[in-house]
Length: 145
Image: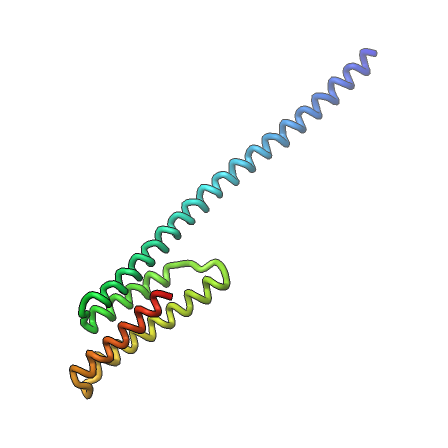
């Protein structure tokens, strides 16, 4: 009987050691997951802040276009700022990548049009102002989509 009790105690000890090891592994994995979750949460907050900033800049540009007369250089500068900020955003889904690419194409197209207008010496001042006004309206419509 003593031998059986010793074997039973020894077997129980091995089972307990195995359970403790498994429990420690699970706890370590949980800690690692929590750390990854904290990092991902920080990244999400940074992306949300960046997105909020871009939305504010977009609204500010639309408002400025409506409220004041901008020079071509000012308009081109603002468009370039939006291009740079947009390039910093990371797109996760296919739809986000498509929207981001379309936004970049539109911003670059507007920037080229502004440069073209500023370099065109054949246009009269009134014709340039008319085209600038049309371009501003296109940009506003695009920003509101």
